[in-house]
Figure 1 (cartoon, rainbow, N blue to C red):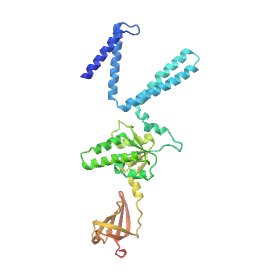
Figure 2: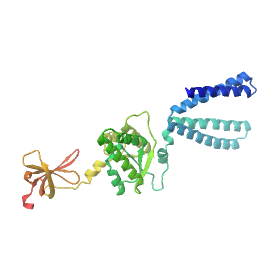
Figure 3: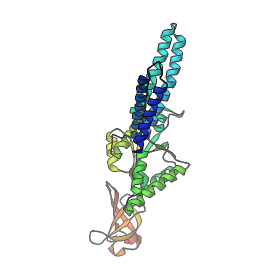
Figure 4: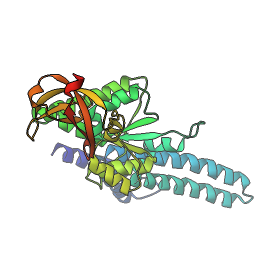
Length: 329
């Protein structure tokens, strides 16, 4: 109610100024009507700005400023080159009208073009160009990305979209204790990456309001920046590759770094529980690989030598099968 009264007073006051000081030789009533119409137009613009996102307001303002600058430069150049004064004046006015309008529309419809992360795509370094890698929520929460960066195995700029931060914040504020712990871990990992000297982090405002799914937004960001996506989400991995986006899967990297064990070799393992079959024991390696051992049920709770009989590659990793090597004890 207070805002409505303020707008009404503003319109009345503006119309009163027009009536008191009529411009352009108009009659007081006509001048008051013109001033009131301008006040209404300003209010409508203010309502539109309030409903618009800050990103759209910023990008349209920046686009208009760039258009004014280019229009002034090109208009001055054409005015200097034109022989006829009226033609020169016409060209200058046209440039000063068209280019700011074009900049405003581009900024309004394509706000991501004025995003720093998008603009940096066009700024190439001397060594061949800047490389971007987009991080998703799962890989941040996982935490291994920090160790990989610290070891120097991940180069380029790591891009974290604002909508990923919002998703992390939502997880960190979850009423579920486990989810809340995972979300806070993700935020701590991001803080660690920002403070690290080996990682270059870029928080981007690039967003796609018409897309609700976070994974689809990540793919669009990667396409705009010509970047790779770093994730450990199997579904995002598949969809991104179908869209032609390169993916760096942390789980695939971990599997590739697991030690190679060949049938016939002997290894040591600590048995922690019984297996599904008779007289079986189960052990786990440091990297989480499951080892199923025959003839070893009685040795649970001990570290024993195992003769490897076979290695099975599954969708979640490797499984090692072997038997208890009593001779190697």
